[in-house]
Structure formats: C-alpha cells, structure tokens
Image (cartoon, rainbow, N blue to C red; front, side, top):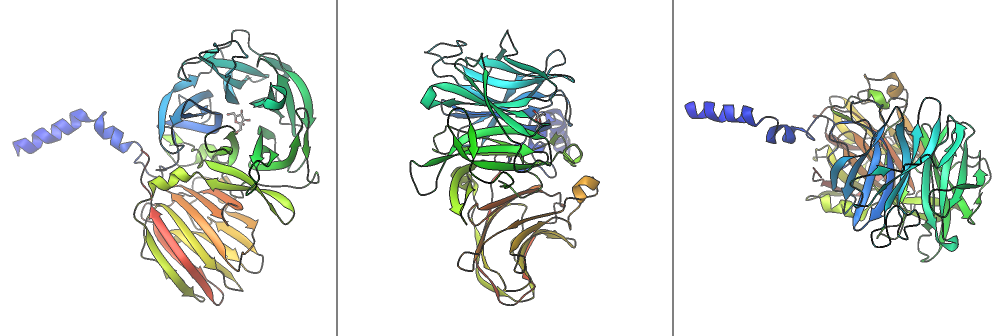
Length: 495
Ligand code: FRU
C-alpha cells in the first residue's frame, strides 16, 4: 500500500514532464501523421525551402493564443517530409507589425550579400502587415535556418497599399535572376517582380483577374511542373488561393509574363474539399518535382474548430505533375512516397459484391490509410462510409447519374459552427477508367484527404467525430457494385 502511495506521488511529481508530454499529441481530434504545432494557432505554410538535407516548414503562427493574431513564423524541419522536429519561432511580430505569409530561398551565390559564398544565407521574403499598410521585407539566416535577422533597411517593396501580400520567390535560371509573385488581393491579380539581389525589385507584369474571382486572391506560387511520363518536359503552373478555396492556371512564363493557355473564365481546382488553402511548394528538392503543402482549414470557421491546445494543421505533402485529360492539362497530386513508411500491417478485402446494401467491415480505426478499387453500380450511389458509429458517419461516394464524387460530412458533429455546418458537401466530376474508380483515403482523427484516380481529383475535409465513431462500411443504392480490392493500413503516429 505504502509502495503504491509512493508510486502515485512520484507520478504527480513527474507531471509536467514525461506525462504531460504523453498527453500532448494524444488529445481528442489531434492528427497523428499531419503536422500540427504543439500548442496554439497555425495557418498558411510559409518559406518552404529544402536546404542541406532538410525540408524547412515555416508557417503562420500565433505564439500567444489558440486563435489568429500576433502573426509570426513558426518553424519545423524534416528529412522526409513526414517526421517533423519543431524549432523556435523564426520571425516574431515586432512593433505592431505582424509577419504575414511569404517564402524562403537558399541564396547559393550570395546575391543578397547576407552571407558568403562559403556559407550562403537562407533568405526569407515576407509581408510586414499593419492595419493600414502591407510591405515586402527580408530576413536572413546564416546558421541553416535556426536564427533569423531582419534586414535593417526593410521594406524592400512598398507600394503604399493596405492589401499587397504573400511574396513567393524563386530563381529563374535562364536570366540568372530572382522572380517574385505577389498578390493584389482586392483586384484579384498577381504581380511579378524581378531582382538580381533580392533587395531591389522591379515590376515585370501583372496577371489577372481570371478564373475564380469570388474571393480575395492570396498566396501565389509560380513554378515549373513536369509533364507525367515525358521526362524533361515542363509547363508553368500558377497556384493561387481565393478565399476560401484554391485554383491554378497552366501556361508559360518567359521571364516577364505568365500566359494562361486556357480561356480566361476556366477554373481549375487543385482540391475540391472544404479545407484546403494557401498551398505553396518546395520548388527544388531531391524528389525532382515540386512538393506542395496546404493549410487544411477554411477561413469561414477556422477560429471555431473544437481543437485544443492547437488549431490548424498542414495537409499532407503532395508531389505535383501534369497530365492532359480531355484536352486540358491537369495537376496530378500524389502524397509523398515516404508516407508509406507509416503503414502498419494491412487488413484486406477482395471482390465484395453489394447490391442495395450496406456492409460493415470488421476494421475499426481513426488513423489509417485505405485503398479502394470499386466498380460502381450503374445507377444510384456506391460508396464508403468512415467514422461510423452512433448513427453518424462521413460518406465518400460516386453518383452514377451525375458522374460525380461526393464527399459529405453532413452526418458528422457540426455543433460548434454554423459556417462549418453550412459547408457539408464537396463534389467533383470524375471519370471511370475501365469502369473502375480508385480511391486513396487518409483518415487522421479530424482530417480526411481523398485522392481519386491516383490524384486526378483531391478532397481535403475536416471532421470531428467521437473517438468511438471508428467503423467503416461500404454500400451501394444501385445494383451490381463490386469492391474489387480494399486495403487498409492502420498508420503509425509521427509523434
Ligand atoms: C492567407 C492569409 C495571407 C496572409 C496570412 C495572414 O490565409 O490571409 O494572405 O498573409 O493569411 O495570416
């Protein structure tokens, strides 16, 4: 008895160290293989740069609270884009000027003069934001990105505008210069600037408005994306966010102008879900193609999601390629291969025929990856339901009449926000290939990412089911649906 008391009091003494560590990252809704900050608010990924064997992930971060405010750059690094090591806040708000979104580059030739040729600097280009003015600013690091100094003659670009933000810079090799994409949010335009030293910038051209102009334009990223199956062939892609979704344009960039090869009104979306925003990419990295990371959230309710003590997550890193489908170049997104290292022993099912029925599979879980190859019924809906329990569940289905995929969270808890409840259904047109539809689904406590037909269409959607809502069903409302293959891998935690 005495001994037990001793052990119990030791446990209390240890509280705050080992035991609170165990609890952190074990909270309700806490993603296990998506990056989240230990505590407090995050939004956009910033400064995605690969340098000396490390992927740097900076992100919009509030060091003081679990809601948006005091914007600073949080920081984490990874060797594989999956396991992240948190580092101290890189750039802090100063004298009322918040550090908004931006990018970072490895200035290998020391064009900025902030380092040396032997020890090149990492340079961050970010928006400094006050209530009345947004300007573009620099900061640099000469210790591989751990400590940062703000440039003493900031800003480097000021047009005396209240809305002028999210600089994204890359090296344009043919002309040996830096190119920056920057957003004029209100007029739905992206401006391009050129510089030889990262300090002096001249405007090259302005693109837009075009495509989806329903919300303010933010977070542009212009990059070269390889064409699938044609090594050495590229096209230029301009990714932008328009509150609260994303789009991309495909075309060409000649060092000055970006030309959209589609009609002005054409809208292409990298993600059809409710919760994907502000994605930018690692342009240069060992995978040989850009890798994007988005913020898995939506401004309409981001401050209200019921997670504590953190709010906001990075979506899974996706490699980007282009493929021509129905005469249009489309972005093909593939979760990075390293994710497969988290797979545990799989559970598999084959040739499951269902006709106007729902079948509960034996598998249960809320941290898994699944692959489903289905032949949908010729009528009605054929689908999958996850987070099943207590009469609730989230539905992923194909509708034979509309030829669309529906991702529907209306039958999951939404009590915390009317804006969340109002955005329950996400849809996208899809094609059947040999009468089959292929799904790759990631369910990570409160984030669901769905890749249809090997990344031709993607959905990122948040859900907040109870822990016990962890069942999985397949169903069809028409005749003759077959699930040819189902493989589910419970996933290891990265924490
Ligand atoms: C996009 C955004 C950016 C801005 C940042 C502020 O989500 O609004 O335009 O720089 O978030 O946190």
